[in-house]
Structure formats: structure tokens, C-alpha cells
Amino acid sequence: MISRILILFYLLICANFFSQEKDTIIVSKNDKGDFTSIQEAINQSKAFPYKRLVIFIKNGIYNEKVKINEWNTNLSIIGEEKDKTIITFDDYFDKINKGRNSTFSTSTLSIEANDTVLKNLTIENVSGDIGQAIALSITATRVSVINCKILGNQDTLYLSGEGKQFLKNCYIEGTTDFIFGNATSYFENCKIHSKKDSYITAASTPENAEFGFVFKDCKITAEKKLSKIYLGRPWRIFAKTAFINCNFEANILPEGWHNWDKQVAEKHSYFAEFKNYGKGSSNQKRVKWSYQLSNKEVKKYNKNNILKDYKKINWYEIF
Image (cartoon, rainbow, N blue to C red; front, side, top):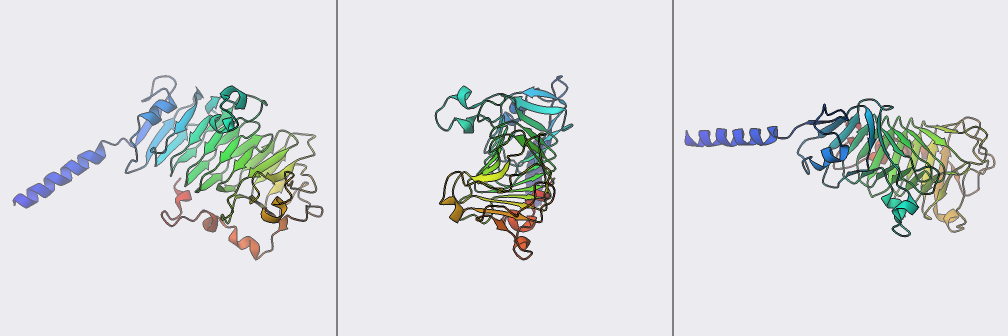
């Protein structure tokens, strides 16, 4: 009898413990939520929560620099409406002025926590065309970015870390190297928009990584009259980037890829395409060191294979 009472008492304590965790926090500019600041909501969130926490952001312009810390795992930040829930800031390389690596401190939103989900947000760096200025930086694994707009100029989107990242139904714009980093990142049904004649991607894929940036069923567009756009160049010599079944509306240069004046990169990088279409898709004059995938080779470029994680199966379907 006593043992049963103790067990019931223990279960009540556990139930009370878990019930203290609030599943949803609301951020609102008009004081009708739990917080008026996104960063404040993150700072007040439980570290390493047992279950997913949602920070719901009501429509508004949030002029703040936001960081999702390494301990803020299992966090979903969801906007009310993509075009009306805006996170904005204006840091850039010279403004930060921290030396040669100042770029990495310029981000409007920085994600360092695993198992993060972003949805229905506009994330922008509004410093202008003034050099390196990141809008969104992701250095964590199992991160999903769904139905978001990521706006900037040079170095708009930084994707790094040893983990996997998934971007779906997003709009991403920029000028030079505006998608860059060493992560394995899978882009599905995204619109990639160039604002200048320059380079879309600059991968720095590690030597031992099987994949780098993979764009599947994406639309590649550009401002009118642009005609000198490269699909990518190797920030580091083992860069890997692939465009698969993408619509090249932009005027991609016939050669397609640039070696960043690194002859050695031509031997080690892996820039690939498969059955792209549209006015910029002709591959007849592509650089000889790029690849046109065969029907057999392209089979490994499926989402499940690229994003697999033995700890969490199909983590990218959490949304």
C-alpha cells in the first residue's frame, strides 16, 4: 500500500514538472503576447527542453538582432504571415569591424541550436549593397526553414556546421556568393534570385562530405538585363553544389561555373547539374570540370539520402 502511494506521489511530481513547460510563447509588438521582443522570448525559454517549444510571432517589424543559442534546442519560431512578420537588422562587415572574419558577426538571425524550425518569416539584412552582410546564419544540425523570405545582398545566407539543413518553399535573394558555407543543405522548391551579375553560391564543403548544396525543383531568377551570372564558385577547393530539375529563368553564363582562380579546385570540387530547363540551362559550353549527372548518378541525390540522420529519422518532416 505504501509503495503504491509513493509511486502515485512520484507520478504526480513528474506530471507537475512537465506541465510547467509552456508549449507556446507569443511575441507581439502591441503588448498582447508574452513578450514584445523575439530575443527576450528566446532568452526566457527553457534550455534543452524535453518537448518542442513554439515561439509564435505576430505580424510586425522586429528591428532586432536575434540569436538562437546552442542550448535553445527543439525550438520552432513561427510567424503569423510570411510577408508581415519581419525580422530586420543592418549589421555589415565594416560596421562590425572585428577583423578579417567580421562577416560571421553580421547576421540578423543566427541559429546555433540543433532541431530548430523557422516558418512563415521574412529575415532581412537592410544594410544595403555595402559588402558582406548576412541575413540568416545557420551553424546547427537538423534545421528546417519553411516558407521564409531571406533578403540581403552579398553573403545573404550562411549555411555551416557538420549537420544537415533543409529549406523548402523559400525565397532567397542577393548579389555575390549570397548562399555560402560548408553545410550539407537541401533546397526544395525555392526561388533563388540574383540582384547582380555575380555568383549565386560559394560552397566550402569539407573534403569528406558526400554532398554540399543541393537545389531540387528550384526556380533560378534574376533582375532584368542581367546576363553574367555564375551558378557558383568554390570558396574552398572541395566545394560541392548540384542543381537538379531546376528552372533557369536567369541568364546563366554558358560556362556556368567559376574556379575562383584556383586551378586545384578544378580537380577537387564537384559542380553538377541534371535535367535543368529554361533559357539559362544550356550545358553545351559548361566548363569541362563540371558534371552532367546520369540517370543512375542522380538517384543518390534524393532528400532522404542527403538528409538522413541516424539519431532522428525524417527530422525534416517535423513541420
